[in-house]
Image (cartoon, rainbow, N blue to C red):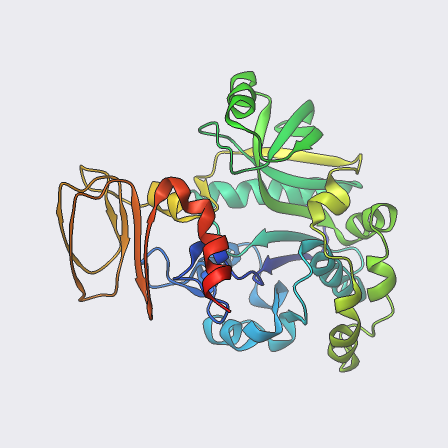
Length: 351
């Protein structure tokens, strides 16, 4: 491995609106024990990286209102490593903030960018892929992403179109493709030349900053002049960060950069982005029902996801393909096939 400092940046600033009512603005999805394992998704992500680097080299990118939640759930993380955005401006400004902070510490550093709310079952294989990507990114001007081996023609994920292999298990990226319709997704799977885009990136500080200088509109101009790693940093970010463009790193850089590479990874990945994704991931009874908690009695009920408080008695009959979530003062009973509407329903109800 190249002798360069390695950091991990965990993106933990979203509100998880598609997981409403379990995920709320005050306590979003990444902080919830959504899997019933006694740990939040953020804690599981953090622990996944500890064999690669220590807490002092892990940064948490989150929103100001979640600073205390991060401190509660990750007490070993230095307080200075919790980078708080004063506004939700998507992933490109957040990554620029982290890169500039790291540039002031170790200008030759390599860092990983990962979501905080994904599940990876094959943790050791995942770390092997990350190490391979770190070595590659440390030795050249390269923007690397892990590409997930698709298991079905999913229409809810973006895809990575593979170009020629550069070396063992590392491919040039021909293009990124936005969420396709079912026909296109089936064609992608049949071709064998497409991977799912999981939003897990690896690059050197110099490579990502160079790419952002070339492809983004002014994000670095806004953030460059901060006195990073000093008491003045937070005041500067609070004042100027909201002026950055609200844009994802995919749109801002990856879809136009020429030096993007991918490493295929069969790592038992799920983004748990929706209730349907959680249902697919969970153990189910012989009728396809996934029950996360509660005292549930079912009659003629199939293919449902049921999440209710521990100790709550629930009796259901005749439901097929529903999401049933009882959280706080809200009871959601919604067809699984219409789950994309939940985000919009939340905005109508939660003012």
